[in-house]
Amino acid sequence: MVLTLDPFGHAEDENIELLEKRFDIKLPVDYKEFLVTQNGGRNLSYTFENSIKIHQIDETINIDTMFGINTGIKNADIEQWTEEYRNDIFEHSIIIGDTLQHGFLLFWQSGDANEGLYYYDDTYQLEASSDENNAYFLAKTFSEFIELIQN
Image (cartoon, rainbow, N blue to C red; front, side, top):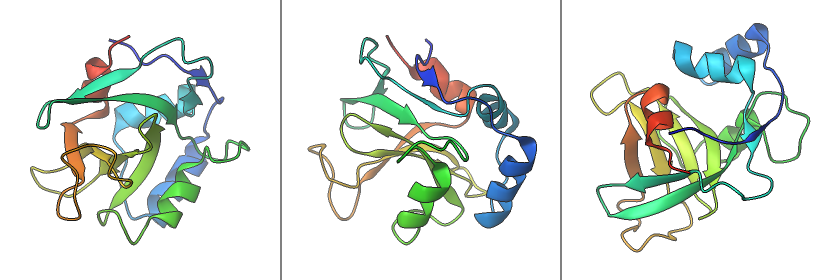
């Protein structure tokens, strides 16, 4: 279980803190370490599946991009996507990636048992998605999320 991407580089601690302040969120240590060491990345050749099973609806998604901070790469920044969809996503959440199915990966800091990483099917590509339900729980922590990935 490993996420295989071509990394964007390294995020700076100061930029991570600015992102947390801007979106009123406190990122977990494991996700911060991912940003510092890789700052996101893309599955450029699509050689790897980077697949995750959504057990609630028996569907599979494939990670295309994990967004970073100040990457300098078009459509690859957490801040850009979170700002664009801010009115559509949960309060205290950020968009951290996208999939080949055209949905987003969210980190939601709800402060309760629902907190964690979700798949947000904003384009209703999955059969189970509707206006009432298009966000699916994936994992409680970023480390657990990484463990779900199959290649």
